[in-house]
Length: 130
Image 1 (cartoon, one colour):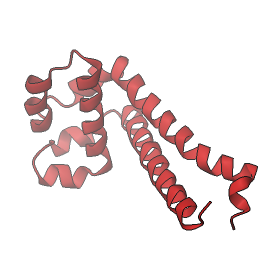
Image 2: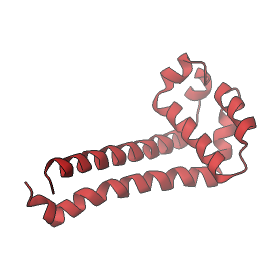
Image 3: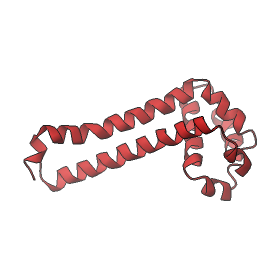
Image 4: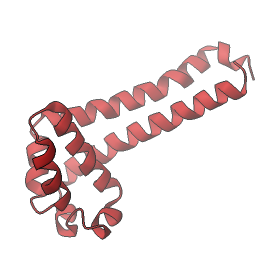
């Protein structure tokens, strides 16, 4: 198996998770910097999580806006958990714009899969002494 790590397949195997995660990151930044950010905020006016988070961090800086986008993306991935904890309103999450919801879920999953793939690849590399 150690011969694998010296081939082009290995390069592709180790570069792909970076590409996936970068695409996910770029999608979330596009949401953060575009008009989708205001659509997201207006779709969740009664969200306890956003009401508590916005006064603390504001939404002026790229970092705080990006944090808000990722918070809502997490709610889109695990809506039952967030509703059960009272962080988001069930009706608002159900009525959330479908295209934006899809974009946020895809962005999150690309980042998650990219990170998991990278950790798996690093573990395999370590185990093979490559």
